[in-house]
Length: 95
Image 1 (tube, rainbow, N blue to C red):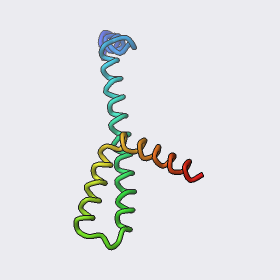
Image 2: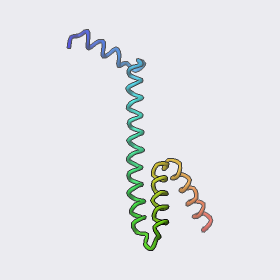
Image 3: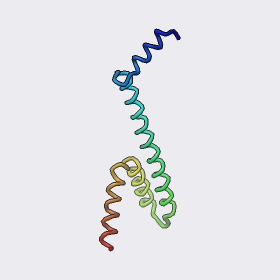
Image 4: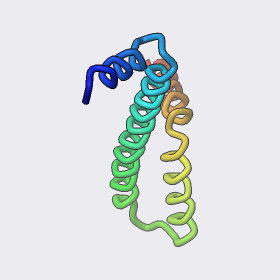
């Protein structure tokens, strides 16, 4: 590379340039999508382990349980806080 190309690249990657902001936005999106995917995978594995422990369920109950696990895995950012608040309320009411 010559010095002209190096100076062009450094000017394009200044913190107020549109290229830098675009790259930063892509990196943040990748981080959020990765976090979502990792937590979803963790929850899916944990919930499937609980599902395997259930015995004596009919075929319809198994289907509905797997459907619930699938929906909860997709929408965990909404479901987990609601479940946590209801768990806190149950704990407080027992005290």
